[in-house]
Image (cartoon, rainbow, N blue to C red):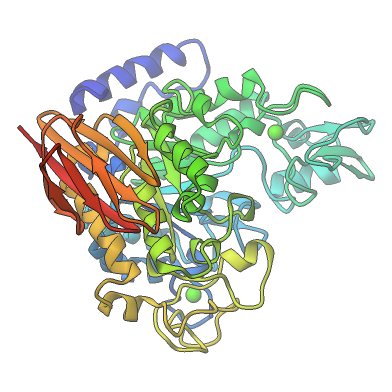
Length: 522
Ligand SMILES: [Ca+2]
Ligand SMILES: [Ca+2]
């Protein structure tokens, strides 16, 4: 648990000075550089939205989303109840799409705007009580990065040691069915995520220092934290030992410590295979709950095994994990709309399932309006389409001209303008769930007690201080009389359409496919 703001800062500074005491990193002047946080201490327990800037809102008519467009839409996010934004990479990149092939770690992608636009975004978000974290890619750069180009063209370049070069191409490697070594006229380099993205040599202290300085560059500008990409891949030891090596965990912890030497900052890691390890305070402090996401829509479709897995998940997992129903990567699933084939009742059950559980929820942009995949596309582009602001079949209200990518197939019915006006719609449901999460600390960061399944309904109790909240979700098509005898208090309904029956014993009637929140009172 965090102590007071000031104590946290002091103890982190202490740890940092101990940690770096014998290195050349020279951040002893940190105390004078540290920017205070503009946000309340527990801001990162609120819901985040993951935003792909290229697909969010275009402000200048070039058909691509940008930072100014995002800044102009902050009131939309605030009205929904969002407390944090995860920006997919906004640093200058070579791929002109997702942004994970970085060419400049300390500048904004030109398609997205300028550093001045970034500063304005941070200021405007903070003015609305919203924190901003950004993707940071430690493991690799783009092939077009000037340091890699120097190393590629001249084996004598000092930057040769910044990447993983071998004169003789290593043999016998297989990463996800592919040989990660790329042969060139001047030797071979390692590229875990494909030929366009060469791995850095993360054993080189100069590379570590370079990333530290880049992270500090953004922290000094007021960023509230980072989503650290692909951290189990920082260091490879051999053809056999390339995934999640002890050195990668240690190095990730090193960067987390630097980030958290700034007050009230948040780190969430992408570690698909071992989230419960990477979530540890000494590694990341936050990590995406991979393994939960693929059970959420199954539970919503009343799969009893999935309901059991969902209700038990946080009984055995740290509450600092970050839950989500889908994200920008196809391997984590389709957009929720496509997962439930447009069934709005199931859609809402899926949303409630992860928005009321412990963990920090991350809503994928468009999920809150029921946005479908991009019409006619496949693979990752299908789930990364322009946001549906309005019913306009050409522009989706995303741009004044032609969107850079196909818009959602259901723009005519599920767009922000119409959803906001629709009583009982998906947007209103997300807004309700976040309203309760924001109003009740027990839902945002309380304990997790009495996880239970009765038929196709799940229920649990969450406590924070004197406040107790019970949640009951009936996924089934039949009403259920939920036995609530063991609940520690008398249920008072906050949300839902249940009926209480008190004889012969306390029961709550849950209609089919329904979500309920109760205050438990003495
Ligand atoms: Ca633009
Ligand atoms: Ca690596």
